[in-house]
Length: 99
Image (cartoon, rainbow, N blue to C red; front, side, top):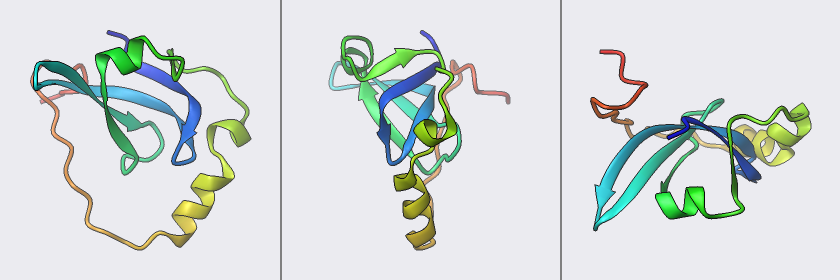
């Protein structure tokens, strides 16, 4: 599975993500995607949503800065309250596991 993905629409103002973990929930393969620029922006997505939708492109598409980091992200970060962030756990099979 490709690790680098570009969202065709901004997610919380960002478009470049990496697939860092895969788990199985209720019989579905679930991927944890994390923004390349901000680990606070992460999401879980099913295999079907990732592969069979028009929402994602494999790899990182070279985009102008204003398209890859939108005004929505800048506004979100400037108004965001400091909160405790949940830890992201990476399983042993992940290519991002360096331990």
